[in-house]
Image (cartoon, rainbow, N blue to C red):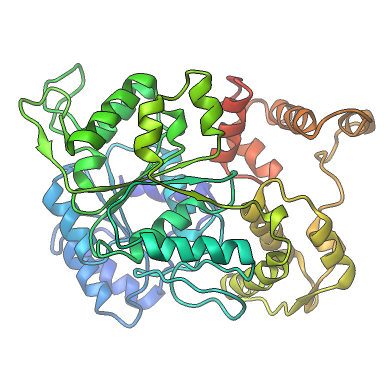
Length: 447
């Protein structure tokens, strides 16, 4: 498992060191000061939770720490969250799950406005990145949203967060959790769009040993792991209608039934859901239950897209420059006027996530102490080697933005021979955004 983890993370572009047990890992931690620790729970010489506690007492206690276990014991999960674990995942899991985890922790999958800490915090306006996940804004619309979030955070009421891909919906959900009296209890995120329908029920509610073919042991579901805390149902509109009915019962009865279980399990849990779809339209089309919509939409929160708050763009640019300077060891201190004009003129359909990707690339490519127009690499959407005629076809008069976007995505997938990961990298978006777009187009393309 250690070798497989190291190989998967290395393929995703991370630099990895490994340790065979907790004591060795703690020694390496002191010597290497890693940006994240991923540890098994059951290990010789020192358990994962003991390692977590030791690191939380170290000189860098804010280092993200993720625990992995095959046992799925609820006591382990709760103990880990109490001691400040950043996240908790159960074996077996896929490479995509690992990539999603890394993007969550390092901010590439939650709107991008994040730094790393065990106890995240909010920040408004300009300044250097502080410890913790932060929401950076100077925009009046977003300030009103933040005011609503502060007022609703202490309650147990269900929240439904609306917003386009890349605006930071998960970041907002974490802000609610971290400003509530449940902040020291688990925060469990479930991506309803990334998980096959056949696995989602077991993942959410758990199952008993022998309840179906392949159920070789009891599995604790995400709802049970989040008991006492918060569960985030990301992209809830992607949930199968049958599961929607079961979710409605959970919200009404405040209890769950494991698959194959003999008795219900009571819950004390807060549900936060997100969507990038028009919920009213989804209800009208019969794709989402109206009664479930009403249950989820107790407190609606709408996150405006970046194009509706252009005054945030310079603030975010400054924030990302400082963030990537720190990560890359660079000393970029500004943006040339022509480059800033281009940034401000861009529609940012991928919102903050897209802006973060562009700034990461620009800081990396910058030769001097400022970012030039060339460093942004925003002057063309076609991939290198695409025939001129294809670019002209994408930009022909009369084509809508949605049509152009779909053509670009499908063409990039074809160039990547159906590989979604490569296509997402070429497009400058996350794999989840690409999956959402393909679902939107009702296209089964690639892998």
